[in-house]
Length: 230
Picture (cartoon, rainbow, N blue to C red):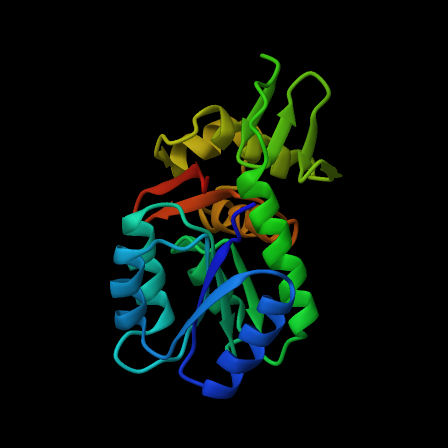
């Protein structure tokens, strides 16, 4: 079986050496880079199966690198960063990363996340029943009002489930905040648009915590839409 190729990008040489050692012991081929520009040039010649990238780097930071990777396709990305603020994690996910882990971290934990992501990428696709919506590794059963992510059932409140279902049923379509208000709150809506953003934030947090490949994309000044990183 062909080994998976992992690109690791970090301007700290010691971290590169540490991650390369752990990944190679687990049977992965590894290429390390101290520059995002150099890594992209190499990727254009020989695409990898997964990226592990740092945020704070000279010349090209991790957010820019992630954006460039997404323009080239759907190769999984794990962001590793000393920045642990919620806004940094949300930004990384919105730019298309599949996971975000903060420094300092356990190399063993990172290996588990690498294995989980690559297993999802290489797992065979199954045609879902008509009454179940599948987006990436998330499944929503409309009759049962249940949600599974990575084959594990995840609890969502009534409003969270309503938002998730509405976005999933309109996957890929931009939905205005006003449309979300009419569908999710109906006559009970309190009237503050920030409630929509807060609800999206809570749903995103649950998707992130469960390593869902379904993401909610912000359309600035308009609303949201659901996409899948597959």
